[in-house]
Length: 251
Image 1 (tube, rainbow, N blue to C red):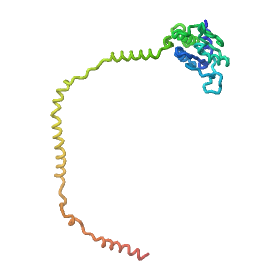
Image 2 (image 1 turned 45 degrees about the horizontal axis):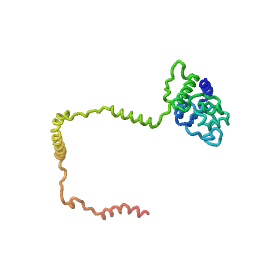
Image 3 (image 1 turned 45 degrees about the vertical axis):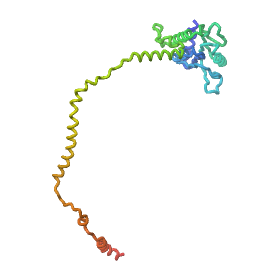
Image 4 (image 1 turned 120 degrees about the vertical axis):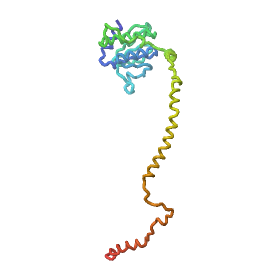
């Protein structure tokens, strides 16, 4: 009955982001994050910044409409600040948990990793059912194991074991045998000699063809002086001066 009442209080908030979920203990942080993910709430996992609900100057200031905590004893700071701002509080309480400023106390064993994770899973499922996202006739496809705390060392050990199993299960692909290419290599052996001979004969044939076709138009002489024409630069310059003389007389 207390869980149903807490689920109705969470589902009554119009904006799901105004529901703040707080978990300071390490074994409740994963359940807090999963709960916030599925109901679209705002999680505060880890250390709570003092003054987040009362000090308007700091950047981490928030104004939630509902606060859900996993343990009122360890989360006493957000509970106290929520009481100053008149924010309703839902808390998972053990037999020795203080219930001061707590509006809805859900009795459970909040010191066990599996117990607190299962209670967060129950609350998330009930909130989704009240919102109409999932039906009561069908089971929720999310397993409660996702809300349980996992030791990082055990998780690393499981990953290493899984990687070792994958490496052992790999099948080695055999390389192709070299004997398959032996016959073809013998047939290709004489081809390079023929190609080299043809390549060497081709430039000689190309050079001989233009030499035979081109006619001899001049005779080569080693005397360069006889081939050059003697030109008198002074005479040429004098001839040009006659043409410019008339223009000079006009000036």
